[in-house]
Image (tube, rainbow, N blue to C red):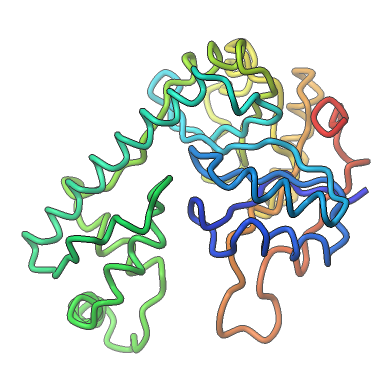
Length: 291
């Protein structure tokens, strides 16, 4: 059975509405899906309604930016009770901290000479994603040309800016101007999970090689239930190693496409869904999440 347990919508850093997202995965034969927007479940009701129409089983999902003993990791959370007040409070605190960090970053951009619309944050009611925030800033022609000029000074062959270049120039220009995520303390997340229920999963550990220092064993001891094995961010080596870790530490194995958008200017591969599918039969103990 085809499943997809990592999807992102316009409620965080994706580009499709939850309804459009469900229409897309339905066409690809997915039978169980989870909307895992960053630090918000604002799109959950729309996602569930659309899944119901397509006879897709919807799993409550979140992707959280977390810290565990000063190590930055991503955690997927499934099957939580969205009405739990401690969970709602946790996410609201994260949202407010993110707003503060973004406002501070925008002030720094103004000091560097960029033109910032005072109403720029009005369109972000939930999580403020760095990719769409960067698009919004660079949609101003003056700002775009300013970034392009800097990029050309480093490589004169550049004619069109890529998303990565825009983000790096705006929010990673220097160590002092880095826009950090609104990280949640993992130990607190585990405590809230005891009341809100569900399963916590170590998200795409092969991305940026997060395996170091026996982190998987430590996360298991801290209360993590699973590890994401199938991810487009993983090489075959990362898939096999994640699978080994799942078996060695008796963890649930999960998989997701981490779908955000259709890539433009491509006639061939436009998203991970063009080449990457998740078969539930390949994932150990997955029924504990998908039923």
